Amino acid sequence: MTGRAGAWTEDPYTEAIGDGRGPLHLRARDGWSLALDVERWCAAADAADLSVLDRCRGTVLDIGCGPGRLVTALHADGHPSLGIDLNPAAVARTRARGGSALRRSVFEPLPAPGTWDTALLMDGNIGIGGDPALLLRRVARLVPPGGLLLAEVATEDVDQRLHVWMESAGGAAGTPFPWARVGAAALHRLAALSGWLAEDSWSKDAHEFVALRRA
Image 1 (tube, helix red, strand yellow):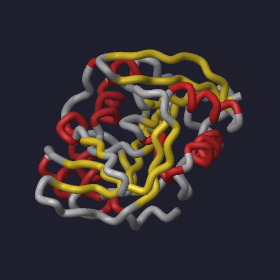
Image 2 (image 1 turned 90 degrees about the horizontal axis):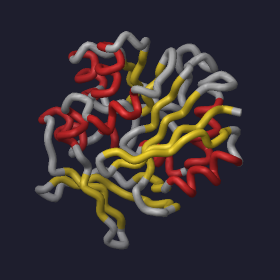
Image 3 (image 1 turned 90 degrees about the vertical axis):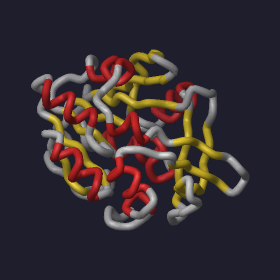
Image 4 (image 1 turned 180 degrees about the vertical axis):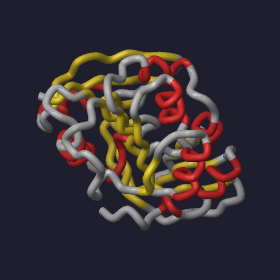
C-alpha cells in the first residue's frame, strides 16, 4: 500500500477538509452508506476524544490524523505526538493548528519505529487498508512490548470488509478503496491473533473505544 494514491488524497475529501464541513459520505455498491463527521474532525477535541486522550501515555502516534484535532490537543497537554495522514490538506491543517504531522501511510517507513508508547486509530481508522489483522500487526511493529493501542470501533457488533468510495452532496465521487468495519468483539478476536491483549473498552457520547496492550 503506497502513501500517495487513493481516495484519501482526492476530491471530494480534500474539499471537505479544506472547507471544514460536509456533507460527505462513504458508500458501497450494496447501498450501505455512512455519513462522515467532517465538522467534528475539524473542530477541537470533544468529550469522547478526551476520554481517549486521557489514557495516552508517553509519545503518541495518531494514525490517520485527519485535520489534527487530537494531535493539537495532545500538543497542548504536553504529550510529544505526531500525526500521519495521506491527505496534504489534512497535514497542512494539522500543522497550522500547532500539531506535528507527516504525509505518510502507516504502511510506509515512519520515524522511530518500535518506540511509540501509544498509537491511535480513531474515527474508524481501524478500517485502513480493509484488513484490520494486517493493520494490527503493522501497529505492533510501531510500539514497544507493553505499548498501547487506542482504537475507535463500530457501535454495532460487526466485522465487515467493504469496497467503498467517498461522495459529496453534489454527487462527486472518489476512487473506490478497501475498508473495514469492526465492533469491539471482532477487534478483540483479531487482536488475540495479532500480538495484542485486550485491556479495556468503554463508551462515551455514542462512540465506542477499545484499549489494547502489545503482548
